[in-house]
Image 1 (cartoon, one colour):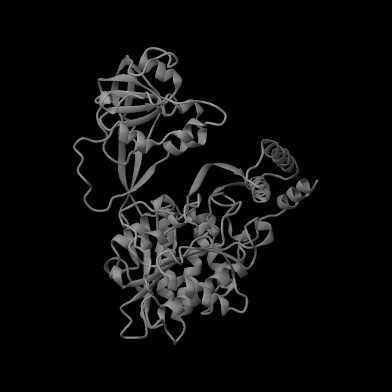
Image 2 (tube, rainbow, N blue to C red; image 1 turned 120 degrees about the vertical axis):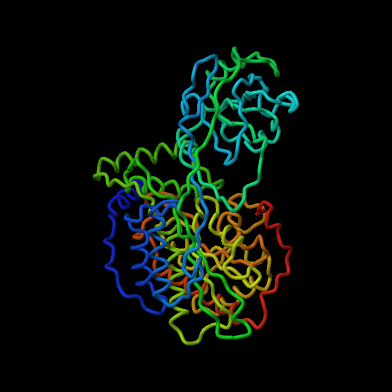
Length: 550
């Protein structure tokens, strides 16, 4: 009964009207943040995906505001923009894959994966059965040279094939093969296939390594296709069994994708320390829009019920029976309320909240006479959702000397805290990540600043734990600074039901919470910028070209 009442209340919640744009004030305040965010996460921004005209539109707004509040441009050629060389890669329609003269259908018979680099030709290669993935009797790598390798997988309710395939490991094992076909397409969710089908993005930073050999072409295939490739069903086949000859070639076309960071500087007041910088950042992109609208209210109600059950369950798992009950309530909601179609992933919290918070902080600093001793560099990174590309490019090609950056403060999803959000904690809750991974002093300083607040935050460090499965330390822009030994602090109010959903909209933001987080990060920046020495790095620095370790 409670679930039905909760759904009815959620279904009755309609979108609030956006406020009219207003002149912002110097002090950090909720009215300014609200006005900025309703503009930045408006439907007209179409989800701000990096590599699209809509991200250019969003970054044009950020740059205009950075100029208006008084920052100095610190991008390319005296502008606020740093161009990031992203490319869009799409499956080439001229590609083909055929067996015995019968052409196979992409995305139905097989799903190709984009390796983001050159692949080997396989036209005329012989198919060979490599056995079942994970078996000790799998085909030895030397016997796969020049062949089109077909790999079976085990099926079962507790063993989803799409989750057990490690593409990197297979490409490494059968590096000498002409192609690799994994027999798991029948069991893949439609959404995963659509993800493979969608354009992929890559960072083309300078000269690419020359690979005259290439790597094997890689596809997922159906069991029917596997039977055609090998001339017999997989059941009963022996490892190493020879199959048919494969014809064709697979390719991916590449085109430039517009993307840019926005970078501005506020010079410090101390001539001796002005050449050092405290970096404050957020990411300016989100995930765009979909071509298939959904009902906003029922999606939000369903995700809210799921989130509540996940948080209350001991193992954070929702049972099939609970899922079925939620769907019954969702059906009731459909009947009780007219559908409100939505297809735009507005990204109000992710990371519209961080973006406007950085603007508010910049305006607060620029509008006061008492400037910090060190300079402040504000960076709104692009391409975070695609793989931290903007932060990677900025830290590889910083517009100020990299060694002059004494710390980086990153905000990503800092706008939630209402009771109805189903987030961890409440108005005083704040997750901190990475604050002591390189510098004990930075972590201690943040605690000191917090303790001096009239209403201190309650910090949650659980997601900073070594090996935590959510991998938050590796999943936002701060890590690209940390890999170079720059102390970082990542501030977030945490995940919620609207994460990467069309329902991540400005009306669901807690603007008082966003104001408090913004002011807190401002105060931390003051403490770091006015320190009489650089923040001490007393922990081992990672390999900037190595893999991130949570």
